[in-house]
Length: 116
Length: 279
Image (cartoon, rainbow over all chains, first blue to last red; front, side, top):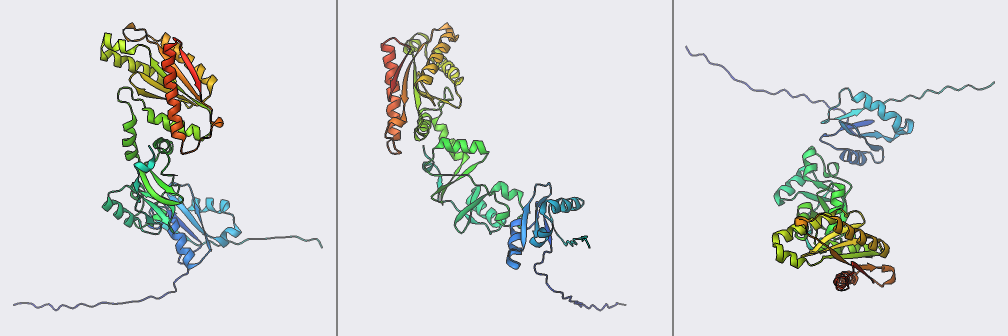
């Protein structure tokens, strides 16, 4: 007795829409030395999408070629204070082949006393 | 002996926003090792095959190129190009004229040409090198001197002991002279038993150098215990006294060298060790 199998083929499609971030990078972009996009290309991309909002800082590091930072962040914290913190954190996982984006939240606490 | 004669003219260029892959493709197809990088027709960098090997192929040229491009003009000498390449450890120079890229000069093309100006027996430069150096000193408006040194009775050595001993003596002379080679003194084999020293200095320094050379010849232990002496013709250039420009500079220098040669012959005739002429 010959047993017959029935074949069927179908596709399930699911679509997830979300808003495209402009620019797609956030506050900081860490560019690996052999990343597929270099710092100049990243800066131009950012400049086209959000003109004059980012600074490119080339650094001397084994794995990282440059860090691109939103200018408003640097208005709050100077680069010489911020970069060592970023480098210290990415050192744990950084790869020369990758580009990492990061979100930075800065809260400045101010406390003043006045004489009554 | 200027770059214009040996550079590759009108080199291909690439835009800084082009991809590294495109640069690699052009270099492979055209069998070239580098491309000057331009932005709005202005030179902004150079990308070499080494840069490409080190970069991710997805990158744009701007992120793979070398930004500090070292340039020269077509009218710089081969020796200036050689110094620049050696001092900066680079393999090629972009040649520009009034901000336009007019050529590219590779180290291999340069060395091939410079090899033509090196004497096989002594490994010393020929006179072309010295003339180019003298031209540089002349353009800097600095006093300088040629010391034309000619061995006494060298023809007799060749006749009595043969050319092999003659060549040994020439090699020994070149080694002795090379000891004087420094930032201020350049040396070449002019031809036969004639050598020329170019001194970045005026009459007094030239005479002191001549005396040292003569002493060195006298105290040296020569092959076959031969007694080798030299007569030196010194020609001193004081450029501030002359109306010299870029057009007559070369002829002024060759004339000065000629005067040094005649002074050497006259020193022999007068049986003096050196003779000075000023220009």
